[in-house]
Amino acid sequence: MVKENNQPTVVDLFAGGGGFSYGFKKEGFTISSAVEINAAAAQTYERNIKPLQLLVEDIRNISGRELINQSPDVLIGGPPCEAYTPVSLNRMEYPTDRLYVDPRGRLTLEYIRLLAYLKPKVFVMENVIQITEGQLKYALIEEFKWAGYEKIYFNIIRSENYGSPSERTRVFISNIYLKDFLEQFRVYKKTTVWEAIGDLPKPDWPHDYWNHFWVDIPKKFKKRWDKLKFGQAALFFGKKGQTFKDFTKLHPDKISPTVKGSGRFLHPYQPRLLSVREQARLMTYPDDYVFEGGINEQYNQVGESVQPLISNLIAKAVKEFLENGNRNWNFQPEFV
Image (cartoon, rainbow, N blue to C red):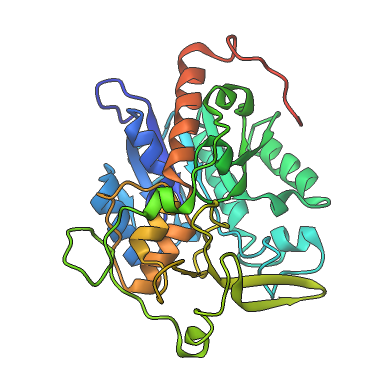
């Protein structure tokens, strides 16, 4: 077992740019191993998280024996959500096909395969809530039973309830129930967009902020910026009666819609897109967290991650569980 000063250890699968690991590192966990296939995201992860081991590899090629820590305390990770999210225009019609047929959805099974191999004391797997649609929830229950975890909890967490300036509702599937512990950190005053980004200088002014540069609005939307009201979008798309929007002109006095990897926001006062740093602030990243790679890769790393605010709260809950079990928790799970 890999330990540093008896700190609990974490293995991170589908590590991305490190948002999930960041909260655990901040809470004193040792990040022993991480697996990430994207080279730019792995560079970001290495720069900011500095794990003991980072494998830049397709998880389907990882047996588990390559990991330096064969018995971690905690396994975390967020398999790709494209197979499950309704925003995906290629989402399969039948929910269980998204898990068992779609190659992207099957990556969730790779997480469960390595979970069965590593057998950590605690696991937390993040995804969009649509991963529980229809029979998917019951299929996942059976898969986690196969991995050796008889009881799992579908912890639905809305980040804006904890001070995030952007909406984000995600399910954190785990063998521990998180919600009651997290309730003590709930806040009732929303953090607005302008409270989050208003102190940043214009990107074309001299400054020392990483990932903060001027990004022009695409030509086809540029003329619309002046006419758009706060909260209105320049682009709409969808299928089968579902409509989604992009290039939303943010309302400065409200919280932001969900930040997405491929999504972009229009600045409320300046005719440009939000910078990567501004979107990172909406996702609760600290300013010294640096994103590597091309600009689209940077946006993707921000939008496709677990918010550091939420990962840190989850880390606090996991740490409490490892030290004391759940005896101090008001244990009333929503679903077992």
